[in-house]
Length: 418
Image 1 (cartoon, rainbow, N blue to C red):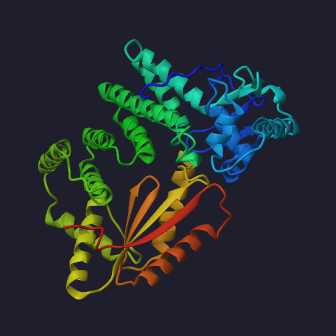
Image 2 (cartoon, rainbow, N blue to C red; image 1 turned 180 degrees about the vertical axis):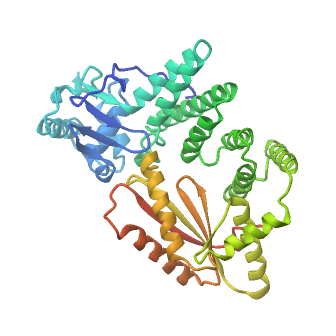
Image 3 (cartoon, one colour; image 1 turned 180 degrees about the horizontal axis):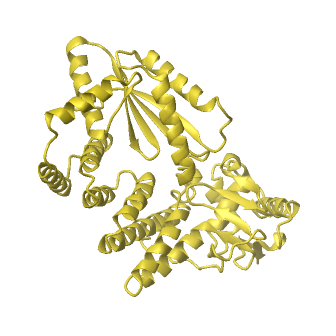
């Protein structure tokens, strides 16, 4: 099925209150009421949680008990399917009653032995709010594009990943998952087009970064991101991003730069040639500043890639190990932390790296939530111990429940292809 139509409920983000059942499905499954979590990813394996996910997915229609059991647990046999589903629905309602959910007994309806989700119950569903905002924004694209952009940004803030990722291989999830993914792609494209037309490049960069966090392999997003960097006069960052994404697409997907990517690269080179180079005294000053640095060398993207290539050549010639470290800040649910919180944590991590690494190490802030480290002359075990030490230094000063540091180490030889 290529196009799926779904019945809309009256729930929207603006209408949500503490008295509503709040259901999250984009990027993770979670059901909350009154500040308490009733169902979540960690408990998604329980049958009541799976039944909740199924009924909310099939919310535009009623389902027979046999169809429910076949979809959710096809390997299990039930002598009395109707009674089995009846008991599970009863447990769902009991859970909601115990948490004081209004109309708890009517959240899930039963008509003629068929079960479904009651659209008239007091609830807010992120997927429906996302869809409604996207539609409102789309309708305003021509008449009021700036208002449309505002609504698109509200909608995209709700899209934190694929629909119900806990049910990755479930056939009954796929139509909605593909539908919301297509809606996300279309909405991002229209938002960026509005921002480009009105030359809102600074905001375009921020929104593009958020979209790339969700879909890091979308080449069109990377092209728009690089174009915006060039419009902002950030030519070095544009070239560094081009180097990063072409290497990523090649190593992960085996894809070589497309004609559009090669075109943007020629534009980057042309803009770089328009700017005069540093004179010798400027270079001497920069060299002196770096010699006075006792900790690791912190550099821009282009410089970092150059150092990686030099160390790779040394490794090929001398057989010495060289490793790359990846440090990424995420929230507890693997999503980006809030912007202000992320900025503070990145600065704290920056200070940890400057004080905890060797003079010969090289670091670069690769994006708003990630550092990359070049660790020459260390074995894999030694490199892992370095990152363990950094992690300990970052988390020791105070308990962190809102920001996590995720570390990984990779040998440089398979990653840097000259």
